[in-house]
Every structure is written in structure tokens, then in C-alpha cells.
Length: 256
Image 1 (cartoon, one colour):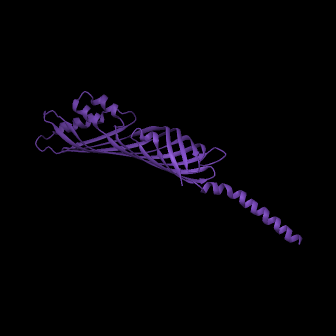
Image 2: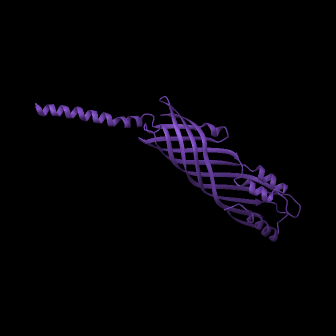
Image 3: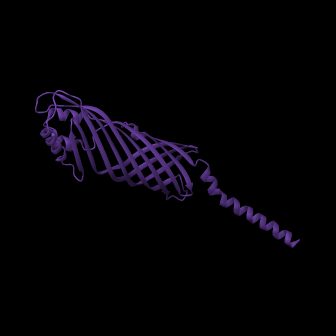
């Protein structure tokens, strides 16, 4: 009889232990998936979605995708300082627009006692950036005849950073995610290929050498530039640091 009572007591204690310890898991599972859209980014033609998955009492992983159409050259001012006196070059630089895609994986740690996905968090993230352009650049060499360079350019960037923010829960289904500040830095590689299809007014070898030198003499701090112009075709490769800030962003999310 005593053994049976002991067994009952053990079962009750074990049941209570399992129940208490199951609570964080249950809380973690309900609404553990969040789909968000960036409201402040959309106001500046930066359209993004983020998926966040709660993976522990105080942590989560997220993946963000975004697209930004019609953005300017990353080093536009440096180009204008170098070639702004040339009307053709200035027009081309000021009118050149890119479409930018970004992918941002992120790890978050929530500091608040209530745990993920609520409250103040500290995050680390990586960032992949891809920008592309296809355009026609109009220029006039020493011959005085207008030429049209068919241009195809790409930028690829890899970086990392840290983010501080707060996520608020609105009822059981909605969230407001506030990115307070998130600086990042990385390396950006770019390549431009161009071809001039004019078969009548051919650039001389000296013209091509002068053009190469002009491009490589462009002063962009901490960047390297290599140019090759030959047979009415050209390739320019650039590599250097890029940096930015995820700041004061506001996203609305739906918990699944």
C-alpha cells in the first residue's frame, strides 16, 4: 500500500514537472513563424519581406529578401568629380540606375524575460547584395562623331553587421518589429562590359590606351580599378569596401 502511495505521489510530481517544463516549448511553437514586410522601406521604394523562426526560448533565425529598383551608382559623386566637366559623361552618370537585390540571413537573441519573439534583441547578420544594369552610354571621341557604348554592369557584395531592435506583439497574431540601428560593412566587386558597334569610326590604339588610363586614374578611396580597352570593346573591374546602416526600420508581421 505504501509503495502504491509512493507511486501515486511520483506520478503526480512527474506530471507537474512535465507540465511546467512543457510551457516554454508550447509558447515557442505557437506563433513561432513570423512573416513580415518592411513599411518604412516601402516608403523609399525598398520592398522587402522577412521570415523569422523562433528556435529557442530566447533565440530565432530570420531570412530577409528585398528589391530596390532605380538606385544610383554607389560611387556617383566620385565619377562626377572626375568627369563632370564632360556633358556626355555627366548625363550618363546622373541617368544610370540599378536594380538592387539583397538577401540577409540573421540570428537574434532576445534579452527580455518573456523570450522570443518579444522585446529587445541583439542580432548578427550577413548580407549579400546584387545589382545589375543594362544601358547605352553615348560619348564623343576626338573624331567628333558620336559613339554608343552598349553597357552591361554587375555588382556583387558580401558583408556582415550587428543589429539592435525591439519587437512588439499585438495580440496573438501580429507583431511590430523596430530596427533601431544595424551598421554593416563588406566587400563589393563589380564588372562592366561594353561594346561599341560602330564599324566606320574606329578608335586608334592610342585612344584606347588613353581611355584605359583615364578610367584607372579615377580616385575612389580604398578601391582598385582595372580597365582593358581593345578592338572597340572594354572591360572595367572594380573592387572595394561598402558599408551601410539598417536604421529606424519598421516592419509589421503576422505570426503563424
